[in-house]
Length: 114
Length: 111
Image (cartoon, rainbow over the protein chains, first blue to last red):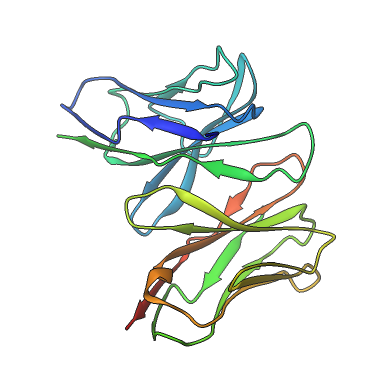
């Protein structure tokens, strides 16, 4: 089955530790995205990548880093510099070479930092 | 900058009602509009995508319409069921730009 996988589903970390969230897709999509979702805030874009080895900052990139070494994979690292990392993180992908540019989402990772 | 608003923010209805969820956007130069459903603690599931050249799309009991000139889209849910309870989000996109999301409408359908 084609789709987007995110792992783990739940992640717990101590304050001050870096943590990496995994996102893999087998849809052969060009673009991949990371969003953060907090109650009452809606979706906020952290980073996106439209092509391998290239990525752009979104609205709230501070304290986060990404890499895009393979088309299928777009891991997100939450660093200790992120002041309030506890949130629900969503990965998405879309085809960018042709329309209709439909976006697909993974199941999400809930990160809790104490 | 595109802004997307969804009204109402929350809705509670008895089973069987026909519902209309609204999505409005400020910049009418869009390429497509996508409706999503999100269950608690889950990712977003794509329901319908309407391209700018289209007026509506239908899937089962769902019908989404688009009026670019007025900056509005509606999601119509016929004969609502408790299983329709979820948050519904719309996202608007220009061709090569990142989608802009609304904050969603939280729907509860009670038996």
